[in-house]
Image (cartoon, rainbow over all chains, first blue to last red; front, side, top):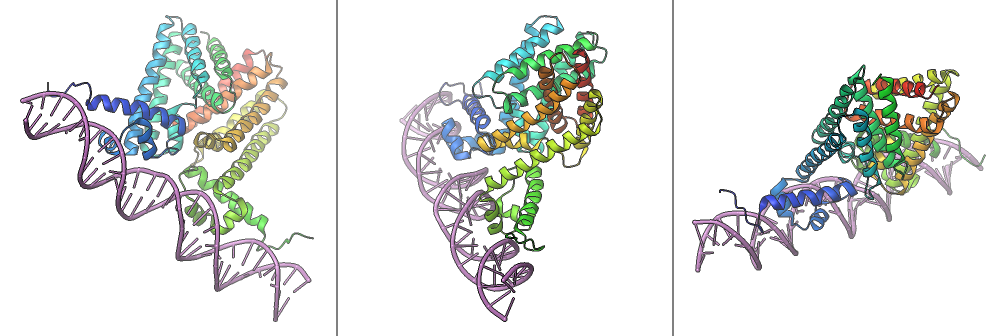
Length: 195
Length: 195
DNA sequence: CCCACATCGAACCGATCGGTACCATCTCCC
DNA sequence: GGGAGATGGTACCGATCGGTTCGATGTGGG
């Protein structure tokens, strides 16, 4: 066993902890809203440890965004699959999950999109594009299974609804009404495509 | 005439020029992406002038956002009114104008929403909420004139489409397809409300 | 037992941050 | 022509930025 699996000084475990803590504070305060010093204080690690694991603040940010994209997409995919085979039920489940998300106290919009807004340079921009592509694939899949006349178009429209609802929930309504509005719009669009 | 109306050293004109130049660079680089020194260099003014007119960088940012919100809302309202009385034509015109916007080389999403994403404190957040309210009023007006069954709901859904298209155009498609997709969705929603 | 390794805490680096002060210059109005 | 006010340029301020380095501490496996 080349990799030590001890409980206390396990680099992998440390890295995972740093990633989790950094994800929270970077989301809550913004990428430029918290310096490395405070970041270290918050995650309970020294600068040296942080830089050994991630190389730079941008490296940490990239790792955080990558992990978060994976997590969120997996989370939504699970919610859709758990809703059974009916596309309408799947859409309903998806937007209900979003409503739960919007209701959470620290909700500040989509972390990946927010990051790309703050840093419009390759790492963040690329990740955001990929993130939206993943969303699109999930939504287009639902449109296809629903027998929509133009599943690709409907998938893109559902993506617009999802992102729009997230923005509106973040910056407009404190309520989660945006998710409900988007859900009804999604179902109406699906119906208008004969599905 | 208590206020000097000279051509050269006119504070009002200076302020307007600073505002216009600052709007561009702050939008292009992000609120935290450009320092006050570089900002002054870009707008061709000294620090003292900038601080005399706006008090602080945040003061400048607030003035920029306020002016931009006014301008954009006025711009969209004009496009809607120029399309004549037919609500469907008005919606079409609105999303066509958005498509033009998305196509512009320096497009980086909605400046006000972006700002609120970067600074989730009172000035920016409040302005973003008001900005979305103005959009909502414009869109709900269209929904009402179209005779929609639930104009308030439809107005909120159109707002979600507008903001969603803006986000997708910014972070996903380099194409302006998002505006066309949203337009079709908007018309379909309008139809599904019997209008 | 001991050495390799992970970690912490703090000092330190140059650069840049937002903001202030000072002064020479220019333009306008009287 | 002279004085008031707006401006540009620059030096400067303390604070913070991202990042590096070093020594002390503690843990684990051989």
